Structures are given as C-alpha cells and as structure tokens.
Image (tube, rainbow, N blue to C red; front, side):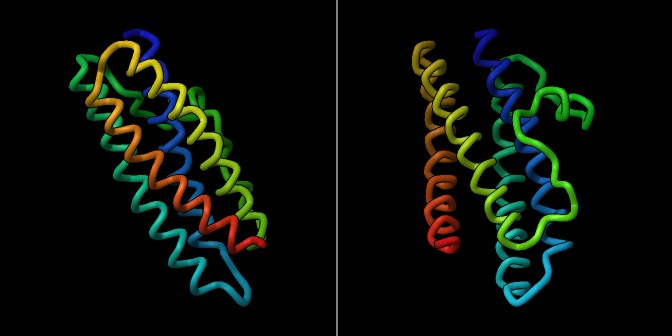
Length: 144
C-alpha cells in the first residue's frame, strides 16, 4: 500500500504543477492561434483540476494524506513548471511531453493498484489515462 500512496501522491503533485503550467500557457499564449489555444489550455486545466481532486480524495479514502502544498508538489512532481517564455508550439510540445510522462506513470501506478486488488483505484486511473491519451492524439495531430 505504501508504494501505491507514494505513486498516487506523485500524480497529485504532477497535477498541481500541471494546473499552474496550463494556466500560465492560457494567460500568456500569443499569436495567430491565440483563441483556440487559449480555450484549449482552459479546458485542459479544468480537466486536470478534476483529476487532481479525484486522486487526492482517493488517497484520503485509503486512509492516507495527499500532498497539499506547493512545496510538496514541487518536491514530488516529475514534470517541470512553465518557463513563462514559451511560444505556441513550445507550449503544445510541453503539454505533450507532460501528458506522456503522466500517462506512463499512471500506468505504473495502475499496475501497483492491480497487484493490490484495488479495483476502484484501477478504474479511476484508467479513466484518466483514456482522457490523456485522447488529448495526446489531438495535440500531436495539431503539431503535424
């Protein structure tokens, strides 16, 4: 169980950092694709907020405490903050890299939950992975 909680907390941290990063991109995107990217980043940070909350609540349901401070998020996260100087394509490539990283780590966490027979956590993670993979496909197609 300890490994599962550690892995889930890593994703809480990733979603905390990702939420702020997507807001950064939402606020600072410029150029010809401003409007659709501005809307995309808002949609993504809204969705990330739901996943962030769902995983934190799952940790609580399992009798543990989720990471809950910016300091913890930055210490535990495997994705990096936005620089604040990214251009449109760099923003999209950064989202792809982050979503791929989180998707890989969610798979690892899912496997730990399966080993423990924790089907509720498995179901939660599969839903998040499905959503991330759809976003990855759409953004990668946009970058072609």
